[in-house]
Length: 455
Ligand code: PLP
Image (cartoon, rainbow, N blue to C red; front, side, top):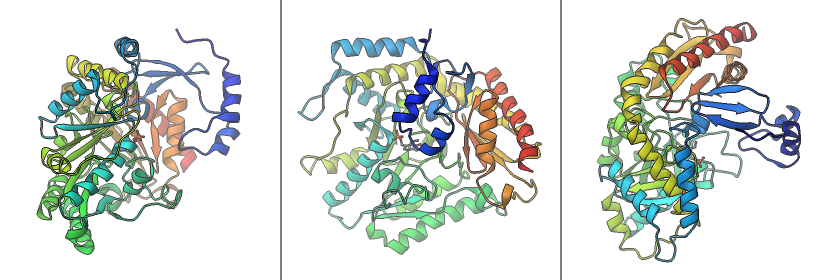
C-alpha cells in the first residue's frame, strides 16, 4: 500500500525546491506545484489527489513491462546486497553487466555483438558521437566528422544529444547545435507531404539525405542517425520505402548508419528493434528506456564487429561514466528482458495488441477533429485538425490543440502527451485489448469536449 503522504506539503516543497525537467517552472508554481504521482500498478498510475490514471505513455515511453513487478524489486535488492556498485574503469567488470552485454548481443542476432553501457539515452548518444568520430580517425579518414540527422528528431538533452536532435526549440538553450551536425527534413507526411503518394514522399525525404551528403562532401560525413520512428517528434512513422532507401544511400557513400532505438527498442514496434520493423541493418544502435522498463537508469550502445576491430587499434577509448555497467541496473535489465521473453510481449504487440490499437485508433477517423490516426506496434498518434479536408490547424498555426486535448484526457483519466497539434501514446506492452478500448474511449470523449473550446 502507498504511504500516507502530506500532498499539500509536498507540492509546497516542490515549488520551493524542485526544478522539474523540460518544464516552465513559473507555470508550475502558478498551478500550485506538480501533480504528485504516488504509486502505480500494471498500466495505471495514481496521484496524490486520488486519481487513478491509465498510463498511455508508459511513464516516459519506458515502462514496457508495466508497474508493480515485484521480481524486479527483488532482483535489485539481491544485487544490492551482493554487489551494489563497482565500476568498469579498472579493467574490471561484474557478473550482471557481462551477462547483459551477452544478452543484448544475442538480441541483435550477434550483428552488433559489442556493448557499451551508460545510464541514459542521452549518454548513449554521447557515446555514439565519440565512438563514431574516433572510429573514422583510427580508420585513417579523420575528415569524416559530420553527423546527418533530421529536424524534429530527439536524441536527448545533453550537449551532444540536443545537437544531434533536431528540436529547434531546444537549440537556443546552450547555443546548440555544436559544429558538425547537419539536419535534413523529416518523413512527416501528414504535415509535409499530404499531396504525395507515400512512395514519392519517402523517396523525397531519403533524397534530402543524399543531397545533404553531396553538399557537405561525402568524404566529410561520418554517420546518419535516426530514430526508426521519431517518438518525441510526434510519432512520425515514415513511409515503408524510406528507411531501406536511407540505408542504401549510407552504403553508397560509406557512411555509418545509426539507429536510436531508445523508444523503438524492446518490442515497442512489434519486433525487438525498430530497425527490424523498418527493414534495415544499422552499424550501431543506442538503447535505454525499455532495456530496464525504466525501473532503474541504464542505457547501452551496441556496435558492429567491424567498428570495434578498428577501435581496438587505438589504445584506450578515453570515455565512460561512473555508472557504466552498474551491477544493479544490469541485473534489473536482465530480469526485465527475461519477463518480456517469458510473457511473449514482443509477439503480443506484433500479433495482438499492435493491430488492435491500430483498429481502435482508426475508429476515431470519423471524428470531426481527427485529421489522421497512425500507429506502429504500441506507438500511436492522433492528428487534430480544424478542417479534415485541408488539414488546416486550429488558430491557423501549429501547437494549440495537442496540449488542450492532452489536459482533457488527463482529467478524464488517461495520460497522453500533447505534441503540437497531435496527441501521442505509448502504453505499457502489457496493455490488454479492454484497456486499449478504455484508452481510445477516453480520447473520443476528450475530443468531443475539446471541440467547442477549439472552434
Ligand atoms: N533518444 C530518444 C529516441 C529518446 O526518445 C530519448 C528520450 O526520450 C533519448 C534519446 C534521451 O534519453 P534520456 O532521456 O534517457 O537521456
